[in-house]
Length: 246
Image 1 (cartoon, one colour):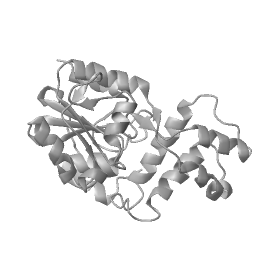
Image 2: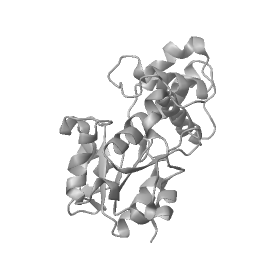
Image 3: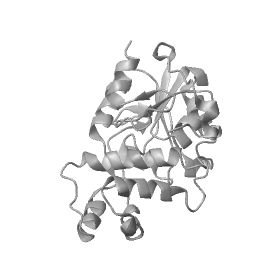
Image 4: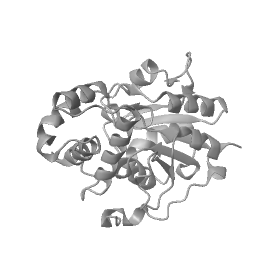
């Protein structure tokens, strides 16, 4: 698939691990995914057997992410039909027939409390190396609580890895891809943008936003959906930890 014209400035992105002095992470699509139980129930209701392997729901999520990347208005999350591209790709990946899409969309309005435990464990290993870390997420105002409740991290002292900042778009009043959302995290880390790696799962918000802020960026693309894009991609946080190993 060809790159959209909107992404012309995103090509030839370099990720230079030896220059990274801090890392910032997204939440959705990195540590959490859409809850799959309501989706499985809806699949059963419309006569489709739920997948035997729950990883299929993660694959569907990343197919939806790709649909957003090529939707034609990549920075327009506020537009009414924007997430419809995600819903459609997610549903079709799970075998939902086009005629059943409208009914299936009801199941897509779910929470994001399915925790990717392997990515959380990898993040803990990275934090244990002493690399300064932070969180920046387009979220609903509860990102600090989510990170604590899901066993990922907290700001300051506590039982979990300590991060320099947890920036929630609702609390900050600005959302990715606006580069301003990264400023509080960069200030807390005390590093120049070019020395900081951002790790997320979307092109329209994460890759575009981090690049606009002058940061390095890696997209988590575990199913290789974005092979035709030129920015750096890795399979999971284990791969990020390996890449950043000194």
